[in-house]
Structures are given as C-alpha cells and as structure tokens.
Length: 330
Image 1 (tube, one colour):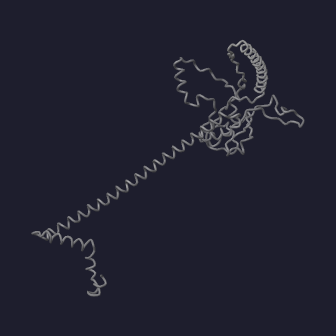
Image 2 (tube, helix red, strand yellow):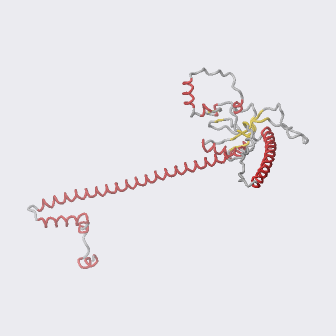
Image 3 (cartoon, helix red, strand yellow):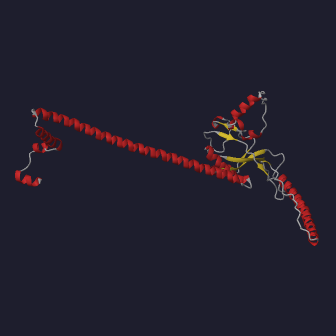
C-alpha cells in the first residue's frame, strides 16, 4: 500500500512522516474525533484540555503498568525466596536426619561389638565429625618396649621398670600416616598429666547440701566441669604442647578413654573356672533329671497296674548359666 501511494503521489515529505508517528498523528486524530463528536462551543479549548487530560491518562497508565510489573517482579522474587528458604530448611532437615541415622548406627554398632578396640578408629571419625576437629587420635598407656633376643619368651619385651608411654593406635584417616604407631614419652606434651595424681591441691570448702545440689545441677551440662580432661585454648601459647609436625594454630583437648573390657588374663582365667563349674553343675543336674524320670516311670507303672489315674509330678529345675564376664577398666 505504501509503495502504491508513493508511486501515485510521489515521495512523502519528512514533516508528514514526523506527524504520522503514533504518539503524534494518532493522538491528534483521536483528539479531533472527540472534538467532532462532542461539538463543544469552544473547540480549541476543548481540544487543548483533551490533550492535557490524555497525557495525564497516559502517564497514569504508564505508572500502573510499571507498578504492576514491579508487583509481579516482587511477587516472583518473594516466591523464589520462599522456595529457596524451604529448600534450605528441607536440606538441613535431611542432613540432620541423616546425621541422626549415622549416629544411631554408630551407637548400635557399639552395643553389639564383641571387642570395642575394633571400633576405636570409627570413634575417632565420629568425634571428629561431631565436634569438627581437625584430627582425633587414640593412644594406649603402656610400658615402653625393649629390644629382645630371638630366643626370649613372649613377655621379654616388657620390663617391669620401663617408663609408661602413650602409643597411638587409632586416628582419623588424614592423621593415620604419622600418628598410628607414634610414641609419646612421659616427659613430652601434656596428655600424660591426665594420669598423674593431682599434687598440692587443697580440699574445696564444705558446702551446705542445698548449695552442693545447686552447683551439681549447674555443672551437669558443662563437660569441662564434669569430665577429667586437659584443654588448651591456644596451642601456640602453651610451651608444654608437643608438635608431631609443624606448629599449627588451634586448640587441643585430651581426655582419658576408660571402658569395661574382659579381654585380659584375669577375665579369661575367671571365665574358664566358671565354665568348668557350669559343666559340673550340669552333670549333676542331668543325673538328677535322669533319676527323677526313672522314678516317674516306676510310679506310672504302679498306678496303671492298680487301675488308678496317673498324674505326672512337676518339678522346676534351676537354670544353670554362666556368670557375666569379669570386666575391668581398659
């Protein structure tokens, strides 16, 4: 259409192009149409007011459009923020549930463990995860071993007068390489202080019963007051700290790990004695049961021959079972 008009009327003047823009020609056309339809007494004043009112109407429409866009965007942002917040809550809840399952599985495994020594490496990892420790390792307080000859007996490597050392046997995976097998002499570090009797400490003043109970309740949740330990807040400020490698910033805590165990010679000897005693008691009881059954058979025959009703006698037998294993602190 534009090409046909151009062929007939020739090229369009720039002023005409300018006036034909939507925000000029279309607006003027609409204003003139409104003036014609209204037919006011003062058409110029009417047309001028219409243009002013049109601009205000357009501005209001533009503002409403902008506000609507803002509201839509704010709502969208709010919905996305709420979704992200809920996703974070769900993620933390899932992590907490997973951590709870891992902890329960850990304690369940300890309850069914035949030898807690087999779970000490897992304990290192569990502690490290729970307290966010850089490294956790467990050592055993034992006498330092001495060289032995080839024909020596099995205990020759242990000297009665040998000094006690801490030999580390378990550690978190990133510390195993240089900690497992390491030996801490008694004159190094501060861990050995856990096993020394306190010297020069005065007895605390006696308190009234109510005061003692209140203090016990106040201290119940504070591990630093209820468990024996050695705690160093800043290791670089403690001269006694022993460094296995280069010094590092951080804190250090040592606690004695004491648990009941029956894996020792005394417990084994006691278990063997108990087992032999159980066998003897079972033998005596089996003999008594056999005699009782034989006696019952004789009485049954007598009753049946006499034409009387036979009612078997009941007898409760003692349950013979071994005593619990003898345990001591390990």
